[in-house]
Amino acid sequence: MNTIFFDLDGTLLPMDLDEFIQKYFGYIVETMYKNGRDGKMILNAILKGVENIIKNDGTMTNEKKFWQTFTAITNIPQEDIEPEFNKFYEEVFDIIDTGAQSQNMIEAVKVLKQKGYTLYLTTSPLFPAIATQKRMKWAGLDKEDFELVTTYENSSYCKPNPAYYQEVITKHNLDPKNILMVGNDVKEDGAIQQLGVDLYLVDDFLLNKYNLEINCKYRSNSEQFLNYVKQLPESK
Image 1 (cartoon, rainbow, N blue to C red):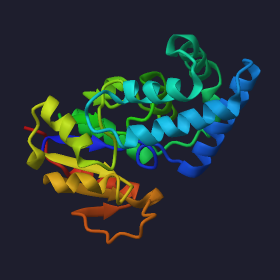
Image 2: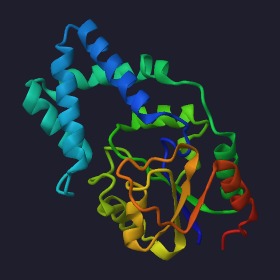
Image 3: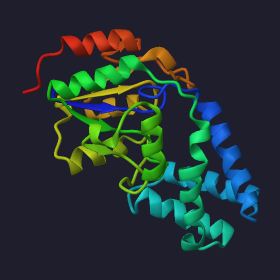
């Protein structure tokens, strides 16, 4: 093993995902109303765009799939409203940050880098890079910590589709047997096991909303994960 895939929400970034989404959508609607837009229509278009990203079959990037859906519903050209979204991420998005960080996971990333492991942030690519980088900072991390950060610009599938992981593996010429996936969602992160990749579930914020059987090679809390990382050999 020489490569680690990390999930973000609930793994590297401690958070209640439902609470985050509720606040995120609330601030989006409020911001768009302030901009003179129909906030509810825009939220509906965002939700449908996200739904279609999750169903994306690789024929286009998630970014193109999102905007194709959004413009069809709202009749607002991408170039007219995208600057408003970017301004939202720059000026409003940080309000949602609770300040919670996992020092165990921050230290684990540091130790893995020092030992020469290659790290990938395989977070669901529903967000543009500008938003994902903000959320990484909330977690106490930086994009320079990772070989790749998946965002809607560079991905053509989404979790829990195994093709999302396969796309990363293929593009970067990786060997599934040399990868460890570290996540907290039994379904979304566990999907990578279909490709022969081992899964480590960090269960501080375990998600298993479909009550699936938990079948993974490793499972522990973040403190025990840090201890596991410290015991790993140097990467070859």
